[in-house]
Length: 421
Ligand SMILES: [Zn+2]
Image 1 (cartoon, helix red, strand yellow):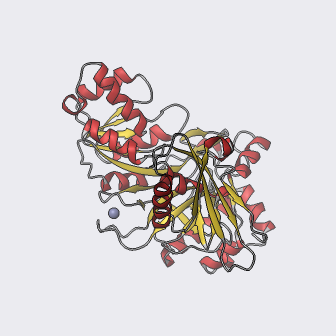
Image 2 (image 1 turned 120 degrees about the vertical axis):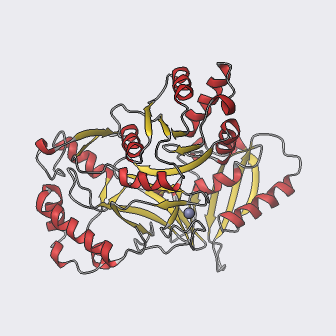
Image 3 (image 1 turned 180 degrees about the vertical axis):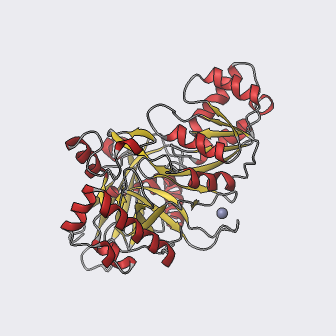
């Protein structure tokens, strides 16, 4: 979809809300409590201001109180086609006609240059969770011959991928790295004896190092993808590999400032709030999983006009520093590119009599630093270039930085000492 949304997209959203209001007891009550009559919603602004959000905890709690599906359910059980479960546990029934993310994934698969007739090897879990089945269906619909690899059993997976000449890998990048090691242990050369040409990377962060390593091992081109357990796949890279195109045509996605709730323009960072379009067994309106994305400005050279997004991290630890929203994961990306650096803390304050906030990055060192002044200078320059905030850098022994500041939760990575934040 586009962002800001088009008139047609808002019209589909209105139709969905009317359907959900009629069929889902949970939403009928929530909308009544908010004084919202779906027919009265005239504009996106009105929708955003008046329709309440749904948090993951709302869904979990309601399913616990009214097991197994909660009051979200909008159709009788006889109409379910399949049932997935996600951590929580959350039970997600699906109508047979619901695409289950397949239309989004098919766009992503096309953007990778996958051709009908190729052999796709899917290594996400097929057990209980939706990931493996979703990808399997999508590759099948894209005309591929699909191998249901699933997880584990790496020697068997190497044998099967080799026997069938699999050209497309789909799964986590670390499992692909594992298949490379296994192939070598079995006496194979991953480049010569296996035929992977492109890789659909998902369900795990694709770090630059992992991407480089795996691409070198197999001579494969990896494409990063993102999604969320309940709302499904969202976006994927094209061959330009600069951000992920938002392919989620079956969702109405909003990107909102985590502090003000106002829409964020391309170039900014926004929290995703998504509404599933069309009839669903368990519909979700304004579902907010708490994930923040950077929105890239400008058009992609590949010609696909859809919005490009970059995953930033969970919104809970985001802070606005000097007018820019910063997530510790963005800073971690910069510090982890330097050898000998570990956990860090960002201290933000507003010195009296000064016009602007001050941000100090205290980085823990894990090894002796030869040229500390040079390192501090380089680090500050990299931060200014990528995170867009000027920070003073201090190097301290890693033991001075609390463990709770570390990745991936970064719970104590930001210390805000401003009076009125
Ligand atoms: Zn593109």
